[in-house]
Amino acid sequence: MDKIDAFLKEIDPRIESVEVSSKEIVFEERVRLACFNCGRYGVNHTCPPRIPDVDYKKVFFEYQHALLIWCIMEFDEKNEANVRRESTQLIHHSLLKAEKYFWDNDNSLATSFIGGSCKLCAQGCAKDGCRQPLLSRIPLEATGVNVVKTCLEKGLVISFPVEGKFYRVGMLLW
Image (cartoon, rainbow, N blue to C red; front, side, top):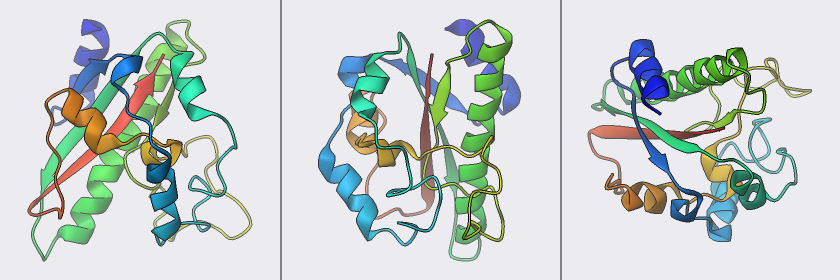
């Protein structure tokens, strides 16, 4: 665990992480239902209803290790949109690098789920398919994980409405 923590800090010192047990990951169907009310529902190729129809809770329990990965970034009215995108990109790219770390160390099934919707393509998703299918990842919330309650299990308090700070949270499984 220390090696992956050090690796993540090398990527960016703003990255924080903590191991979670499968028992600490809170799954709720109402979280998946909340995706229906999001503007990216049916638009992003990594958001519902376009994600694979699998039992995500079962998938998560197939892994021995889970790591919550997050960053906290301050924003104001003037830079909110930029910070929203930057925080998503930071977590997304850090998780991709962590996956590669595991690939390079004989764990080809390591996978990750990003914080918030995919924002890899500045112009948004193409209508006919994902422009970057090898890099895109499913949002943690889309799997049914109640990110707020799962973070609370580890002492990280996220509250709404968001004021002044974005908490962007993803998860790495291996």
